[in-house]
Image (cartoon, rainbow, N blue to C red; front, side, top):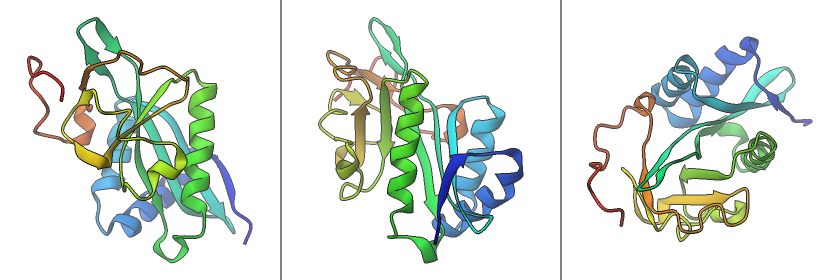
Length: 178
């Protein structure tokens, strides 16, 4: 089957909602995509299309890191979804790779993901790189990738997920990062 990966268009929105609902077995990720769009936070939104049907989707959005020296711009990779019957076929990895290329071309330097520790490291993400960052997530599921080598050198701070993510518990501004 021939898979095309491209930027989303307005005509893809219903397909994007469907693939996120199916992949995550609920509405939350589909609603997250809509909220991030509405708040103007989208850096890149790509779809994988097969036979004129959206079979995968990935979104990158603004995600500031608060540091004592000021904000450091970063992007969140979330969500990434593939139709259940097409998972484990390389579509997700293709979406991640193409999305990282697009983010790099748009001048982004840092990408943060909360994801499976057996999957994202093989695409270049590292929990160790995120080690000096704190946020509502921690451990080996909280990972970073540098699109520009050294972009995280000396960066210690708090990752502030936008309101669109609906996270109630974020670190207090005076809390020192782990």
